[in-house]
Image 1 (cartoon, rainbow, N blue to C red):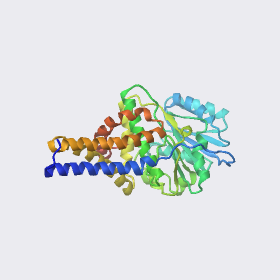
Image 2 (image 1 turned 120 degrees about the vertical axis):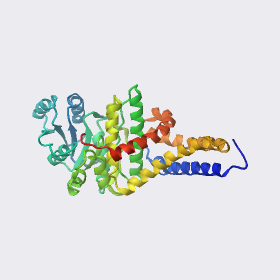
Image 3 (image 1 turned 30 degrees about the horizontal axis):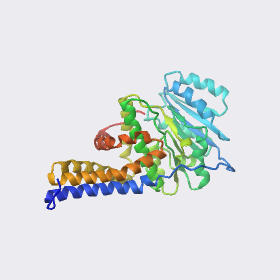
Length: 378
């Protein structure tokens, strides 16, 4: 188990394991540990710029009845709510028509199946909704979401007032808790994804955003021809748009808990799988530098566990491999706990070692899905 004269094979395997651990911890210290703490925000004397909330919905009648009142109750001086009714076949159209007659802040854009004939996903709907908007700041969410507080709009709009260079604001959207295995998996994955894209953006290296809680300037959309660069695929209306238009100066993050947008829990593996398939499919269209950084992290993560397992089969390496892995978790766990605490996700940290192992198979599986899969629906 421990020897003063290790074999060449033992030295190689332990060196690989040590290198992988080092690379992982560099990512954790440089990116994840840097995620800022929530601070109190002074909204006094802010001359709030009018904003437009944009929501694309298809067959979401029940969710719209919850979401729309929550949005109209937002504490913000001047805003409009644009709902894109994306060719639903439930009672959404009738419900929205009635609301529109009595609510001046509500504007509904109606999409028919005929209009969508040559378009994939919801990019046509969002494009028409953005075109129908009249305010300079756009804030997006989905129909199955609800803001954590009435201060959501102010928190998401505040970075624009702090820095005139800001054109994109990335928010966070946690999944609601439910006592099911798929919910635990989806919450863990969502928290880890959020930690990744928010931490990278905080280090001026933004690479994606999530449409459940996202904002950007209306001018940015039209200046860069909207979704024109990726109209040929269904996903990408959020992460690809951000990836192609973000830079070190124009992107901010907003992780105040009052700015969170809660998303209904996934109730089946199929619905979660569709969501992950859509996101990973879009990932292969990211900028090369972003694919490299994310791929490097995933590759060394996989190699870490592969090399650890290999060390278990070499008697001389076994003890040292266990010590290295123990030190790895001794350092990593507090960083993850501290980072998840900022996202109000500490309850799932206990499952991180199991998820960390499953993440290897997860990356391989969804990597293959991204390469060989196709996406035509949203």
